Image 1: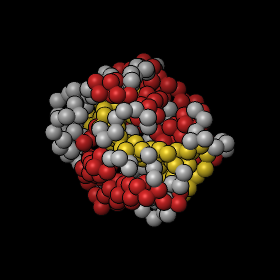
Image 2 (image 1 turned 45 degrees about the horizontal axis):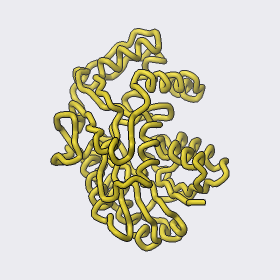
Image 3 (image 1 turned 60 degrees about the horizontal axis):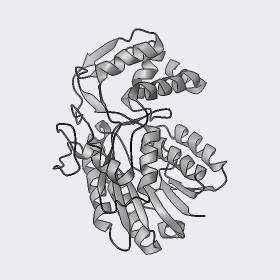
Image 4 (image 1 turned 90 degrees about the vertical axis):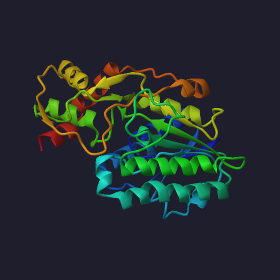
Length: 318
């Protein structure tokens, strides 16, 4: 049985990827530091579901502090999803972002080389592009405008520079991932929670800014494929295939909830770009990737997840 290691295994994407690997018959070692980047309770709930499954084992701790070479023994592929996410918070916590995103990647790569790991799949971000005109192409200049984006780019470069005969590396530039289980600090979830509890939405900017939203199962599929695809040493965009404005998000949310959504308009947030959009040509060619979930269908699934979870209902009402 092939063994994979997933960092950030209790997170939004990492937990879904771990379940996918287990479903495919792989043994999975999960690593998670349960940091305060968002509610550790949500991550713990996801971890409990994984620990109950055959073939999964969990290591708790930060990548910088753990005896990683020991935990990597016999591992074929590492999926490196652990990171401190969030653009706005990174301006006040830059040293913590560098520790969690860059130092951890440095430690992991050294341990992977020592342990004989075949491939590392690194979860990068569309934030490495900065303010640019869609569609974003992997070959264009990169100019992140936030500490978060800069640390993700630096970690991506560490991975790609390490790729060679002894250790292969692939970097996937994720474009705004959403769906059931989404992080509580992300706008789509915040908007839906507000609408479901009849609270106004805090809209940063004029609403015309657009995002390439990517459903979590599509991200997981691309990440799974990257472990074996002929893409070593390369960065690949992984997006949803369409751009959606925030005004369109609000209109869809009104349709999904059957409620009028009020918006409190404020200024643009520091570090937020106006538009994102992925050129998926390379991912289609090297991964056989094709996003399968439209934004309307995917967001409906997220809204229903929030509506059905009593814990989240109580959280909204608190």
